[in-house]
Image (cartoon, rainbow, N blue to C red; front, side, top):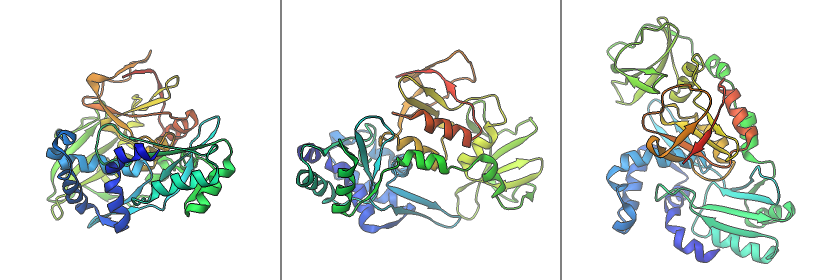
Length: 350
């Protein structure tokens, strides 16, 4: 295991920095990533460094989906909080299998490997691999298999890491609120559009995109504006002239549930889920799917992916899909119920 780790450990450097800081302003994340990319050999960087501002968002989404960090987005500031280290069971049959999430230093993986040898070298089998093929600083996927669950608990105890015997993917899925509950939690609606706010764009669910023109349809509408004070995008749901500020992803699915579309695509045989780029999941829903496997969702361009189903629910997503692996049917079913969506059962060909 440690030989493989030596070849991969540079991928953990961002997580090491976030662990040391414990709390980081989101605005500082691009600077940290830029510094890390400049330390890599050119052949390992590709086009990523030229697009750090775009990579920053994708990396942050993966860190949150994999359970390493929580993100707190407020009107005047946004922060990244490292989560405590933990070993969480995967919802898979057979031998007990757990993955490592949360805070991690350069000593964490060597310590786990050493303790596995001390406790039960024939029973505890640690392994490491890339959790994402796309980006350089998505943390390593650390998996530990054991014939008995007791050894996983002992390993956690002796390393000071929390052990979750109930798979976190199932726990998170079961804790998800519904769209109605989310909408009921919003503040009282205001009347009319925000005054002197520019950059108005309206979400058109049939193409999964925000556009300049106004919809001629009645019903719920999601509209994006640029905050004149911070320059950041803000999102509002409108019904008639009444508006309520919302999280973008929850807002999208509030609109999507009033359509015939099925943005959640599930290949039951391959245990793959594909989510359109323009209908990304709320953060906890994404984490529930990612924690089925410990792999970050992989972005696949539309031209490199085929979705085959008896139902024609919409034109293909323009840019691509986020694909989740090893998804337990119970988890995607619960995610769909939370968002009031019908699953599109299909063959996903990569």
